[in-house]
Image 1: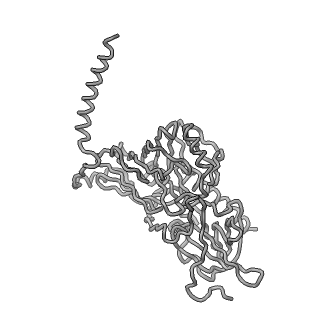
Image 2 (image 1 turned 30 degrees about the horizontal axis):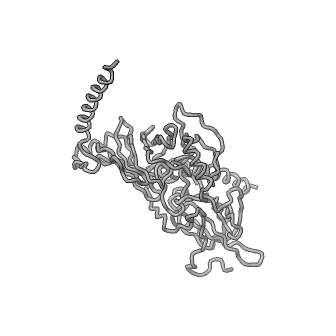
Length: 291
Length: 138
């Protein structure tokens, strides 16, 4: 009996040494000092062997509930109304978020004091994961060591580094997080951490600083992309929350300009009041309807 | 009667799409919510186009609607973006000043404000321009 702790300690030393050796071999470079080698002709040629994600993709019906697929084993979708007092219109939810009790209380409090709109009305883009659920298309660009996603709404760009660099230890929190990815067969697996507290999992549902998002991008047929998104947040959620979006390729589309500040007549004040400016433009010529 | 049926169909489609745009976790409301509009009311009005802005993040339409004083009352309607509508049968020249159109809309909650969120615009030649439709459809 007395031997047990020492034996365990010995095992611990072996594991620790092995881990240290593994880390020093595989992750010699950190996020900050990682230097990507210049791509070779072979690197460019290797892209042709990957699934063809290139081009412009959009969720049918402009994104949202209709294209959500419930993962196997998950609770059956219910046609319940949202049980919240959110100021957003209530519609059937496919699956309630599995909030921890502490977080459910927090969300309830936030919803009780929720503004009439989000800061997106002021042209501030939503962050992850909401930015991937916009009723606008996305373009995928594959280059050696990197997948770039261009989102038309708010003209956003996400960089997913597939060159083997490790995630940073403690990245600055940002709207879309910091992402690395790797290929598992024909599936791109992206892992993202480091999200700004200004972003939410869903309207009025904040995340903790422990949120991690895993996205699995794959083609289910040549013109259909599946994006399975797993939100892991041990503080906010009792278990990982999985949704799947189905996007269709639109070969005849291009990504258009979207300058939200061009003519934004909507706004939300700091105390949450939504406003809209309906002032007509000044006349540009003779009155079209004078008689 | 045909018009009423078409309106009803559009309203149902609109509500389905609105649900899709707003309800799901991870799915953000498109640019803004609908706090300024009464989405439970659906109105139809006829008038002449005063101005049409083909701009982001939203298109805007102003309509001169004849009033009982022999003049016009100005109505304002918010529509989806040119990016969204441009892929669904609209163009920047779809509505021209002076065009006579019928507009289906969800009115402003504020009674002092005339107009609302656009559901559809029907031109004199029968062409229907929907504000919320699947891509490629009209």
